[in-house]
Image (cartoon, rainbow, N blue to C red):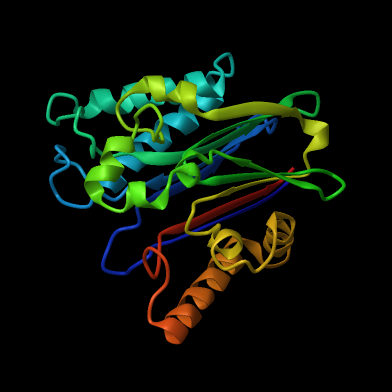
Length: 262
């Protein structure tokens, strides 16, 4: 098994709000991969005394622990319990009903022995890629955010109205019920050669800069590793800035990539 993991902050002046991990059991059979992309609040009035990195570290830790120790739980159940546990750690000090309470996108994958399935879960706009032994790459995407009209997201107020709301998009915040909204499923392990998890800062190589398709992205990861992909993204961002003076959204985003070759 080959495992590559890399994460890079979007700015040296700000902490990295992504969180990534791969955990392997002592038995050597199976494992878990997690990538979280923390949602940066537009102002410091999120009703919580804690930072987004504080939140993603606790949610990520719970996801790793529960997905490994409770294989009787589905990944949706793992996510729901992890959100509940994390909320309980700051329920007494923070307003968890605030629309901008700390939250994150989620990619979660779990695999067992050769005769078991590869399970997966995606919530919001991070990306999971499943590569078959023949090299066919299947993206698993929660595209609800992309399906919303851009004008609906133009201001913080309009975006907040659509966050974790019917007809909008969903993130892991303080309500365990959003786990039911996640895109989830499973594939026989024999049909999976590799698993890739990307935050949207890393998936820019495909979906912002159009340097290749998802299969070419996996090929790049296999050749240059997770850090190689992030380095390519940073080079593209700098080049875009030099050409036009601006790019969509922000120049650099926190970026994380996990590549697991089973």
